[in-house]
Image (cartoon, rainbow over all chains, first blue to last red; front, side, top):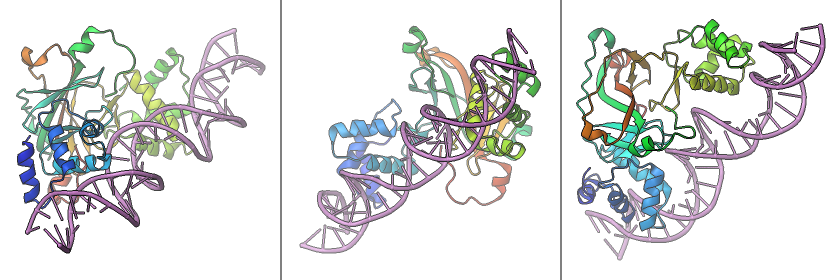
Length: 147
Length: 147
DNA sequence: GGCCAATCGACAACGATTGTTGATTAGCAA
DNA sequence: TTGCTAATCAACAATCGTTGTCGATTGGCC
């Protein structure tokens, strides 16, 4: 994703104000590779800026998403995750602990025309579910996140 | 998915009772290819059995899912969908109207070992988002379901 | 400096899903 | 057929994630 400085400019260009709260969120997201939920962005931002509100976090994340600067992911882990990485890539999801990792593979799936039936292909998402390194080594316990 | 008769037997084997409500849900799901939500299963079942409760529908769907007889899908369309088709297959999702179609393609994604990093691959899901035939022909309007 | 967007707190509301209660129904083994 | 007990019912309340509302305040930016 773009750097905080670039996002600052982008927001200005769009007539959006660059408030300390928004800058704080920019910093929190920049280089973030753990696919945070809104709650965890809020937690991280709160550490820096205790008065920031969850509402503002949602607001700013939605703004960034609708500008295409971050990507929303629904991976069946309960809540929406936000991915600062908007390059074409896919995801590894641990069914045990819910961790998400980026996956760079060529996933051009060839769809036979007879299966399309008028469908216009937009994006292709590949989600590989399994056990992450940590969870592979520990015995399975309890119910994993469904999906 | 298995026929209502087979599911009946399966439930008996597991010590679960085969109530009229459950049979009604079995029938509703059998051959269903529209990936219904719990609500729409409830609507369909209610037509046949007006006194059935939404609670019971959820209960039975969860039972079936945990027995592996149906599959839960989180496709970012707001609510969980239930797919009676448990054969290996993938999905086409219309970002406009939310319709879901089954997709049979060979999607064995080759993941380079260095990207796995200890991850144990379980299932691979491919979701292709785009516009279905109906929505391709009509102009885009309003916000699509996010995802 | 001043306009006005953005934020605040403190809630209420939402939709999807699950839990609770106590009463009733009915599957199925004996 | 009887009886135990699981399943269901209605009617709620509660949960979780997310969004909306309010009036008051802050502070970015022309």
